[in-house]
Picture 1 (tube, each protein chain N blue to C red):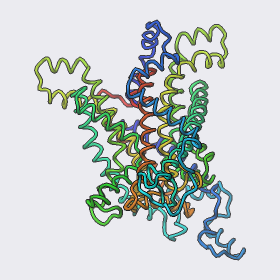
Picture 2: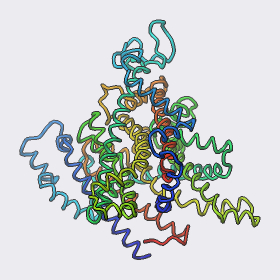
Picture 3: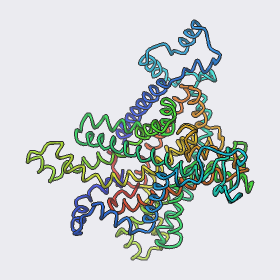
Picture 4: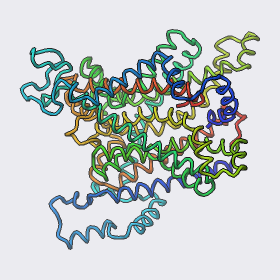
Length: 309
Length: 306
């Protein structure tokens, strides 16, 4: 609570300082320039773009078929055994190429991550706006639901929902939307409570602006920065949790290559074939590390007050 | 003070009731009947109805919940369908097992994360600072279960220093506890560094230095005491994350705690056990966070509780 409250009073000066810069702070071009100024973020962004490109072009980029294996080539160590059949990162227990499966697996992580964060962001923003703007009973109800959710062990909630809905990409996305909206709602609500009382909103109200107009013209532009920052960190979190649920056998069906399921397969072979469980984890870590690097730079550019994230 | 605690307790009870409603509804909407799982060979319709009545599964949902709540306040969370024993007893037996893991992880987190963060802030821009921040970024980007698998590959399979799984001796605790603390160490060192840097820029720190207070005394007496509050808050919230992370860690290391029990119970639709685990976790989370808020008063007498 402490840091959020301490930061609360800074908004006015902050805005003044930003406007004083002469550029258009917060515009996409300005943000991108500031993010790229930091080496770790520039590298992170490059890695992410490469991963997205590979995921999109998976059928052409992957050296082999991701689900068809050759049983005579099971658990081959990384390297070049035959000139015409190269398994750069080795093969899994069913003789499938680990590298190809990692490339295809990126699709699941990205689809689930991006859609879930988008969904949770929209749901959280709407609930946060309603909660902060309508006040009173609605506010109490939404915030109490958020409290309940925060006290609820996330993994168990996710497991229970997947157990109801059954495994699948769509169901995973639903799980993460249902469990992920709280942080967005809290940020938006906090901003609304601050902005609602400010002079320019009061003035706009006095001139007869409707609630909808105040929200669209004044509140939303003020929460976009924090929302983008939170979304980037949530994306990293969802990708990790998607892999965790797939690892527990409750994520995507085993027929679809995913990093979590590959790690789960590889776990049984750690003493004989370390590469099966190692490389998908490295891929996962590199992607999450890149997202976090970009997220850090975004935070410093858009909203340095969100230090605690 | 008394009124504050009373209000917080009322809030905690409210949240617990909310959690119980959610878990109750969620678990009963899950397709798959516990009876068909208990008797896979099937029952005659007559015997089936009898079994459902015995377990109270034939009443309407709200009635089942009312009965559940009335029992719950008396400490009765129903019997495990599978073990035919009180669910709460089963979970309470496993609580110390998970507690041992969580406490060990918390101790490692504090013993490693806080000093690293303080030193990194004190030697700003130095090698230790850069290294700590890099390791923190890596640590926060690593899924718990993968860290566990990698530790097994390196320290259990290759070096044979530690066992891969089980809970027979204190040595068995090392790898799971390190695994579980990985993310928290990263988070804590990062936060401590940020908080300490903020305090280092304060006027009273400059004053203390100017009047010749020894640098270590400045760090411990002035900086740490003021900078630690946000860290304590996050450590409190981390207890929830540790309990959740325990589900994954216990699966990787076959650590027979609450998490493993809960996972198995979800697979076998043993409602009452899942319910008991969730309620107990929520309860622990709320109590810890209340304690954290009260601890602020000790750390900073200026804080007024509302």
